Amino acid sequence: MSDDFFRDHAELSRRAFLRAGAAGAAACGLLPWMASAQEERPEALRRAIERLEYLTPQQEFRTIARGNPRPSSLSQKKKREAGLTRETWALEVIPDPEQASKVGNPLTKAAGNALDFEGLMRMARQRAVSFPKIMTCNNIARPLGMGIWEGVPLRNVVWLAKPSPQVRRVSYYGYHNDDPKQMFRSSLPVGRVLEDPFGLPPIILCFKLNGRWLSSRRGGPVRIVVPEFYGFKSIKWVTTVVLTPLSHANDTYAKSGNDIDSWLKTFAALISLPNPAPARVPLPVTGLAQVGISGLSKVQYAITPADTPLPKHDPLLHRLGWKDAEILGPPTRWGGDLPQEKLPTNLLGFDPKTSRPKSWPMRLTMAHWTVLVPGLRPGQYDFRCRSIDANGIAQPMPRPFQKSGRNRIAETRFEVRS
Ligand SMILES: Nc1nc2c(c(=O)[nH]1)N[C@H]1C(S)=C(S)[C@@H](COP(=O)(O)O)O[C@H]1N2
Ligand SMILES: [Mo]
Image 1 (tube, protein in one colour):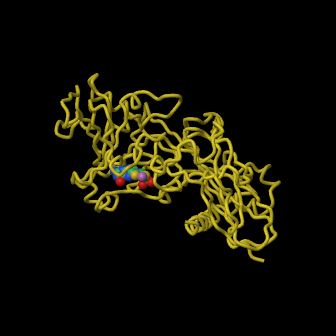
Image 2: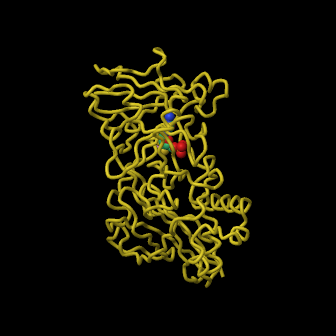
Image 3: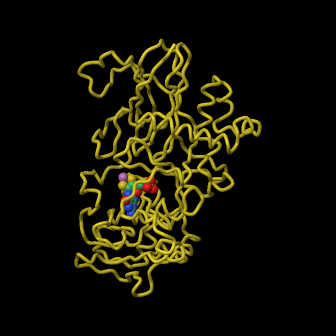
């Protein structure tokens, strides 16, 4: 696990260095985080912070994909045949073949009125929305990537099909090698598709990520993106939307014991910590916090010598001696390989005049955090970090169940050498 952290970290720093060079960036006043705060930081911490990148370039997302072969690995010719290119993509919106159900105007390839990419782009001119969202698999301790997702609200396409008032859920799946056993399906209540509660962004048919066409590996040409859920609701290579009177979920992911109604949780993870670390020297530490549906008020850390017993009768580690880390504000350079390094305009949650977030940290995204740990004597130690959500609840509460989204308190063993 920690090996992965350090490898990711090393790759990030190399790329950041190649792209700008910290000195050059500083000279142009382009430091990634508020320069005034940065100037007051010790050199080592400043360098660790400068290596952080807020948005993840498409090709650096981690991929979770079923399918043999995976749709993204097909040849260009096969992709064209399968409708996995922008020129050949077509979306069907149909009644549920397994239920007695009707749709006023089904969109089908057979009838020649399936929605093609050009049709989607026509809708996009009027209706496209963009929002920041972190993509995380509920079974994995670290987010897969942080992106700005652009698309057309799914409801606009649902309305084209003239749903009957009996529709209760919208279920959808993607290309699966025409093999029913490989189908990976997800679903939502029809109300969530038609209306956005409490300022949530809409469910979208997504065609751009970080300002560029959605790549085949990320589920292009078009995937569903659901802002408030873990990754399994965001179906890639989407081909079919089913309007069903079924009153319950029929997600494929439920079959493997996953809690398919669980919103994104808040949790903290470590990015970098020197290991082995020099003795009696302050140590720069960086990390990220996923900001779930319950927001984020604090990130805390605790360091314990590896051989001391943990407090008794305290399974949630409330009494570990937690100290506050610093949550970093919004970056001034967003990373993510954005075209011209510019955020898309009309980004939900951002001020259109200044292109700055209206609030911070933003729910359903992430924030970086940092701390300079006072020098330690030689030995083995455990570093832990945890989040406190905006309701004041410490990780792993209020929903500690792993299959509802992994949020155990992260721990990393490290060594201090003289
Ligand atoms: N068609 C399809 N969509 C899919 C999947 C899949 O296997 N097939 N995996 C899902 C799961 S479990 C996750 S966590 C996310 C991962 O998205 P990413 O690969 O873009 O990071 O995609 C989701 N969408
Ligand atoms: Mo997943």
